[in-house]
Image (cartoon, rainbow, N blue to C red; front, top):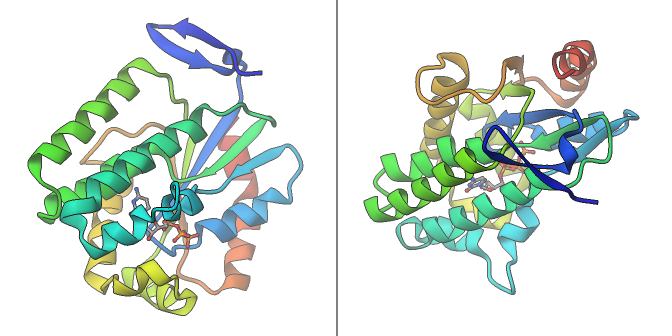
Length: 229
Ligand code: DCP
């Protein structure tokens, strides 16, 4: 059952029992889902994939498709909903000692909202409102993260994978979009010059083919699980 208490002035969920939370981060089509699926076979790990299906269908609407069609108009609509669904994921009851989740409320703001704004595709007032929401949430609600696993890819690799998987909404994504997301990720997680880090970062090079990637995950298993506890 979900319980709530106050800790250091912030709302803390789940009774405050110490559970390790690992966020898998990386560009679009960097292989996050494959990584999560791999670790889902490990006992004592709970895996939460990104709520993309919700972003493609909220009460019959598809804010993801709308955002790609007209980011200036629909960027705030999608990102408000992403922020809500990510918060919901972070706060949901934990059912295992280790939780692994796809992305986080932090990358939603520091990468995707930031990218829309910097590229001139989000009006200043929309960015201000989203930022107020984000600041309120992160000031008043405890969102613990113990480790960030960064799947580091080249934008070109992601572009190839994106074309292969052929998700309808994403057909309009140009290479430049993936390059912008890549640079924002690098500034945040590698150079560590742009935004606060909610947790230490483990970098896994992720340009390799599937077999090689599974091998990498196995090789990094101890680091991932040790770093989180
Ligand atoms: N998206 C967005 N804004 C966010 C988060 C995601 O616009 N704050 C978009 C980017 C993608 C889609 O949602 O078009 C799905 O996001 P991911 O790249 O996180 O999911 P993937 O399935 O592509 O991840 P992977 O292929 O690495 O498993």
